[in-house]
Length: 185
Image (cartoon, rainbow, N blue to C red; front, side, top):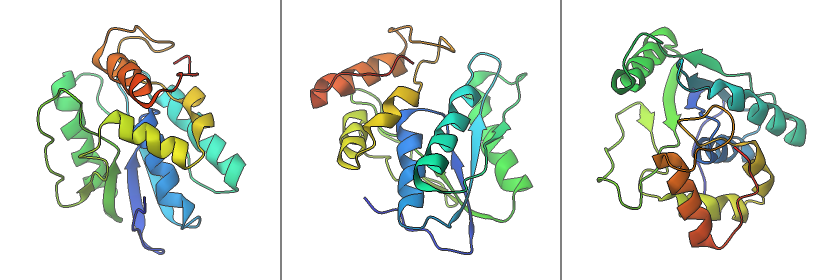
């Protein structure tokens, strides 16, 4: 899969520390290793995506010699969960006016509602993929070693609860592609 970005322009990426956003960061950089991509992590008091985002960046920088900057944490701990995402997007796009497009690795759930289309400056290349397709891309790109670095659970900051939506979708995806999830997060 090819992600079309231009050299000389500034891009943003919502990096959660999960499988999809980690793959998206790789796909953005693999053919344009000098691209300007600034990761952002939406994090609040109830979950710690920030714990997983920077180690993924460090891994890619070390493995490929890239110079991706560490993530910028965004989000307001005082906002309810259902307002956190939109308010964070608005903050990023207002404060970082040099960003021409903000990428999001969101993908469709196998049993979820239809996906919401991307907004003009927000790009969601995995929008019509389910998590099993994301995993297939990870394996096809030879990135199975990032699985151990990623975190999906929305209940526990470390490890997996095994019951939240993200944990069950991750488990379903690995089962669907016939692979064992080596990650502990």
